[in-house]
Image (tube, rainbow, N blue to C red; front, side, top):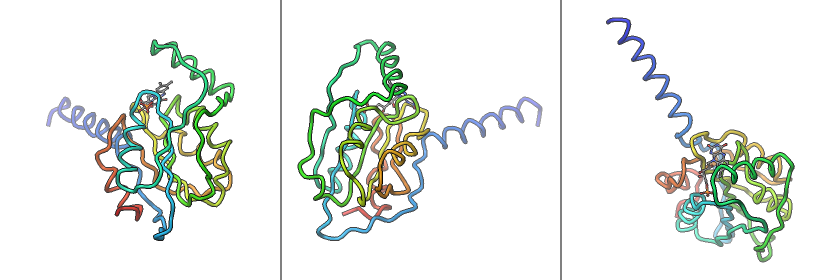
Length: 193
Ligand SMILES: Cc1cc2nc3c(=O)[nH]c(=O)nc-3n(C[C@H](O)[C@H](O)[C@H](O)COP(=O)(O)O)c2cc1C
């Protein structure tokens, strides 16, 4: 084999491994124990619609209550200034006021919580949600959508900010609005119906 072929093969393997890391679903390590009485909340924030699509796919399979986190504040229409503002908000620890409210959070045993990956972490809107509701003792299942960076610090930061809750090991981490695989992921969690 000539040098070029060897280099090309090594390059292909490295690219495929990188793609696998970004696009592969995290392995589910936990099974969620559910009883017939378990109540499920599927809460999410979505700026451009991807996380909403995943939330709807989850909700379609597991039922329960679908809840969109909406807050005060707005962003510039142009993408670049929008991302700059979001970056500053994250750096400053900004917590926008919630405009939508969950009716009696205490009734839920299982909470799916969805966020886009913004600058490697969860969005300020999701942080506001986490700081406003007591999720202590509940099973929290993160679902993250991203633009190619993968999970980065999203699940770690959600876990830190979710005081006293049991964050399930095996979040959904999907590129964009990908929902292919959501159903199998829910089955792996023990939540398939
Ligand atoms: C402000 C901002 C920051 C972003 N930062 C990242 C990032 O650090 N890593 C990444 O993979 N994707 C990043 N993205 C892409 C989004 O995570 C991705 O498009 C996501 O699916 C959007 O979800 P949504 O349509 O529900 O808002 C960013 C998008 C925005 C708007």
